[in-house]
Image 1 (cartoon, rainbow, N blue to C red):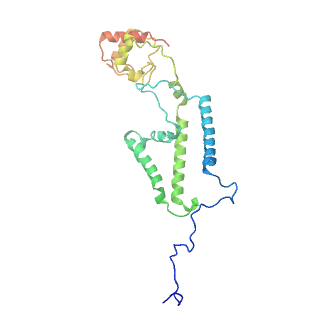
Image 2 (cartoon, helix red, strand yellow; image 1 turned 90 degrees about the vertical axis):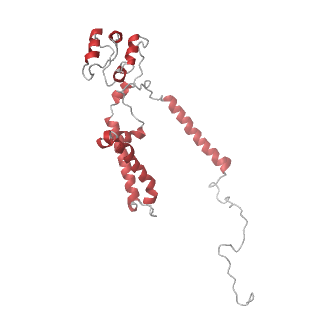
Image 3 (tube, rainbow, N blue to C red; image 1 turned 90 degrees about the horizontal axis):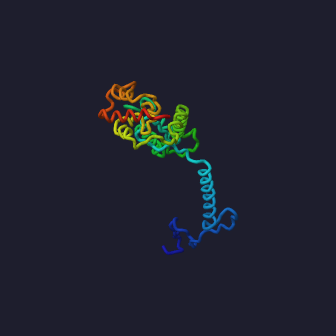
Length: 252
């Protein structure tokens, strides 16, 4: 049929009947609600960031970091404490079935399940609802994680020996002559692992100010005492005498 003889032309619904030029919408009718990204918006963001940065710098200057003594890898008695945001994991490793023979459960299995559930949350909860009461999976996971982390963090804080931690981290000037032949013998033996490089103690007692005579110290090194086993000293007699004389002269 010819045009105009009863035939109706139907166009593609995706193509607008009227072509309009691609000109950005004019937001001038909304005064105060819009602004240019550069420099207005970006300048405001920089100003806010500068205020927070200056405040942070003032805070770090006014409150110095709680530094402790220099780290001593030979001090087996030092009890470390992680930052506050890792305290819940630190506390988890204190429990029977998350430490010792079961340490893999506390370090890999439990954290892996927790973070795995977090990663899978978008696939486990795919409903359109936004009310917590109608999202049992997401709400349950969130509440379980929040309660667990809060409890473990609190438990770690209240059970930690803060006085001992403060004492073990105290910065003190060493009065030990580390060039002394006796100290060189001490350093070369297994004594450092129990008594520390500063002889202040670790898993073993402090060797400073013991009040013992060289002969008594030599006897303990050979026969042992308390938790110290016999024959812990592996050197010769001359070096043992240097070691005993050195320890006997240490004063508090």
